[in-house]
Image 1 (tube, rainbow, N blue to C red):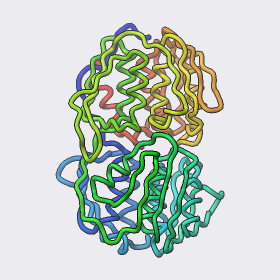
Image 2 (tube, rainbow, N blue to C red):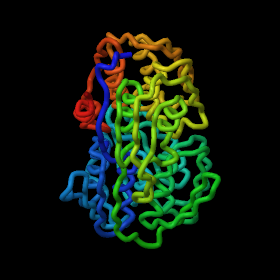
Image 3 (tube, rainbow, N blue to C red):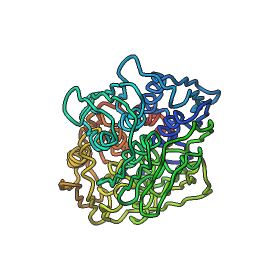
Image 4 (cartoon, one colour):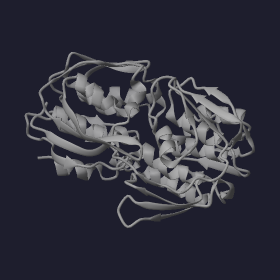
Length: 430
């Protein structure tokens, strides 16, 4: 570990939550009129959602403040078939949630993405949409983009999801709001419940049970426009949190962070590893719990196991947490994270290869990895990103935590979720 030559100090507000930003934009199709979204993520993924909505007939204009946008919607019934394929870029959220909307529209739409998105499975959403009556034609491999949706009058279904996926839940609920009858979606375990919270905030009629079930019926009429203020993204904050607990002398405040119960894994895991974390100024924003996270270096962390039952609460933060695990006392184990193999890259293999190259003792498992914690990481290695933004940001933190520099490849991909990450990191270094 570095001898204290660098540390993180000061205050920062990371960009708006990417997951909530997508929903705040996409749910505007349920309204008629002009909604305002503030605190919007500047991520390239969210720009893909904006472009797709424009192609469907919505008007989106930047507001007077950074991160503010006005969305004028004609309502679901007035959406227009796009003149060309909708380009979701690298954004799986854009593609999956739009599929739920488009399944009930009386026109056909082709959805496509970059090479990374084309390799990610879409059948977990498109299969049940087919059961609801939509017609899906694949231009290449079955279950993968590009594909064409022929929308229709949908029929409600009762769907018991085999995976703990908020994207599956949201896509089917958006389809259910256009279907005849009551659509019921049950998801196992705890997931990020941004959709239900935003439904409450903007007035979408729904029924929620304590067993993970959410039900909706066909919307009788368009919703009224809404205002939504997006909290800061805990997935982006995670990299600063991990850096601060690893770099001696660090003292950092991250403001206005969304701490949804289905997103708190990085906070909770670092806490049980012995990190000095506190959550202050707790409040609610657009139906979401938010607070200011203070992180102070408090010495070496202790090992822990991140198990399958909790992994959905922070699967995107595993690349950052792996760095904390590599520099702890004892073992750090991740299990139940096979989903990481079908993200923007095979993140499990990439995490293992990169940390091994930096000097960690790490073993790859079918659904995770096990690290024997060390007092230091040698570094002096190359860190492959595979065009994956989470791996790129993890590499920049690894560079600070290792004894010798780590050369992170292709940092351009950071723009997918956090275009200003490097500048913000440099601002906090002292």
